[in-house]
Image: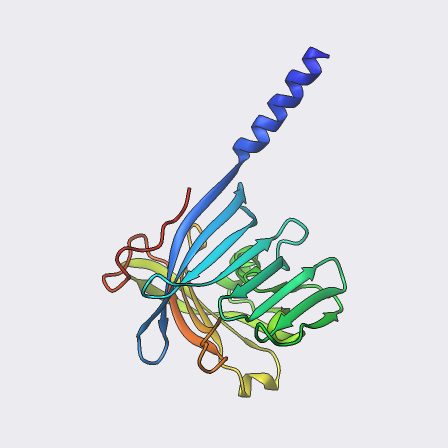
Length: 247
């Protein structure tokens, strides 16, 4: 019995050591004006190279908390169960990713909760899961292949066909990098702009994102168009002090 207990504790200890929390900032700017919009505070739970889940907190330039997101990738590495809640009352979520994918949306504190569900297809991703999808297919994209997938969009209670491709090699703050373009694989691309992502190819680390944000402008209720950077050191125009990373 003592040996069994010891073995169990050893296994639990090994599992605990295998999981780590990675904390870092994202700095978001208005895509047109270049004005600093908000700071992302990430806490990612990782097991080796797999993203298990975590949180993202959003803060305005003056340190005011704009919103909070929880993510859980344990059931699906590309379609997370997640919930985004903004301080002014907007909320969107995927509550079940097993199929059908169940979603919720509320446009304000006093607004009615809307729900919907879509069939689960393959390949499919949602929210931050499309980043995991690009990393999983990195070699194919680097080789010039086009990746096609369905994107579940909780904010629209719907899904849309998308495609990703390599846009070229580039330099990013002195780092050799690669740029990918993600755009609707339908006539929706005439109405919705593309997403541009820059990665460091060695570790497939995201360096920059350009496109529509999941953070809304509380004045208009529309999502921001943003440029978000993930540098090792905060940019010179970042708020000082930055929100704490936690620990």
